Image (tube, rainbow over all chains, first blue to last red):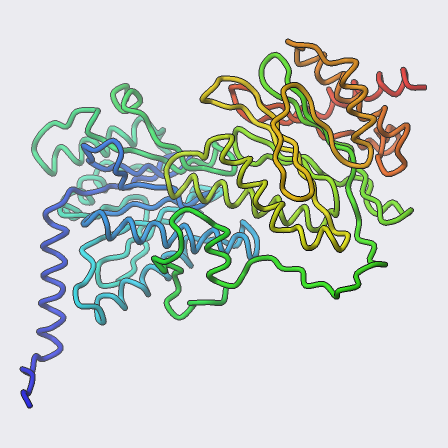
Amino acid sequence: MTVPFYVPPEQLMKDRAEYARKGIARGKSIAAVEYADGILLLAENPSGTLHKIGEIYDRIAFAGVGKYSEFETLRVAGIRHADLKGYAYSRSDVTAKSLANAYSHALGRIFTQEVKPYEVGIMVAEVGDLPEDSLLFKVTYDGALTAEDDVAAIGGQEEQLAAHLRESFRPGAPLAEAIRWAIAAFEAASSRTIGPEEWEAAVVDRTLGRRAFRRLTAAEMAGS
Amino acid sequence: MSGDSARGLPWDPVVPAASFAALLRSQHLEPRWSLPAEAAGLEAPEGTTVLAFRYADGVLMAGDRRATAGNVIAHRSLQKVFPADGWSAVAISGTAGVALELIRLFQTELEHYEKLEGSRLSLEGKANHLAAMVRAHLPMAFQGLAVVPLFCGFDVASGRGRLYSFDVVGGRYEETDFAATGSGGQYAKSHLRNSFRDGLSEDEALRIAVEALVAAAEEDAATGGPDLQRGIYPNVVVISPQGYREMAQERVAAAARRAMGEAR
């Protein structure tokens, strides 16, 4: 009988974390900024069809970075979770908090139990009736869940992006201004200019009625 | 939430990608009414006259507000016309409780598909799916709990409004101009047959819809006419290239007062 090599758990976790971080660092980032009527999600995404940002439920949006197939699985699972809950109980019982918890639980389990951790970072954004009721959650590849205020970023350049965003942020700004901050943060973090066709942008906006999610067009991005 | 709650998220890859009904089945959450073999004598509230027809911009759909259980008025202000999604509407006749659940499931199904796939089902796809849902209820129809919907919407592909009627076995029939169903449906239909013409304006369409419902209410005890004292008016919605829109209550009320005046 062969005795398997002993690998201390610290080492095992470190290796897995490093593997996941490397995968995420190769990809592009996503920023979230609160504005007067909701939350803006902005991603650098040259593909017009393979989305990184999506609608989960009435007031809840999803954004994922890293490996497309993996965050797409998470997006689908999130929509299923939300639709099942809303159908079984009521639409108002679907919350970003319970969804973020479910994501955290699932990613944590995958990180420790599966052969390979997911190389993803995700964000869940929920717009509230009032600006102070809006919620922004970040879940990392190992299932760590954090609640963010006002601005958040995920992906390879998340720290630089978040720092730039925090500098320019002030509460109650109109959407056009939030777009300008987010674009400036991306360009400062990557030291290059990015054309309007390369953005994927969406908002959850409390003025849009029941389904608050809306994608922004390239024309809107160019105009702001 | 039952099923695979240990993981918190229902992400079994075996579930067909975009169907909410299949997801419900996989989680054992689908609505079920298990009835005794002899369900006669069960008097569940039933809803009655709903209609839809084409007009210049798209389609209009309207329904009365009464639900009856035998000879009792069960509800006076039941809503029977609902948005199915942003560009289509569905109306119900038959057993109200079963029908309302069917609508909720249908609405969730369409939105679920739209979110997962990033695009809406075609209008015909929606009608076919609704037909399959009605067909699945056939055993209950034999026990007296029938549901017969009416479906209409704006077809973005062909640029016009289209409407579909159904029968109790899940047959789906596309109608060219107008359709009505429910116990007062025949009376509404004969009124529409006389009044309908191509290219009706929105105001004319509203007037004709309310008159047809008043005509049905005159003949059919299970159809409620506009209730001017209590301020209960028919539900009227239109679906145009701009999408689904509910007609403002004041406009419906004005049309109802006029129609009642003429009916008197």
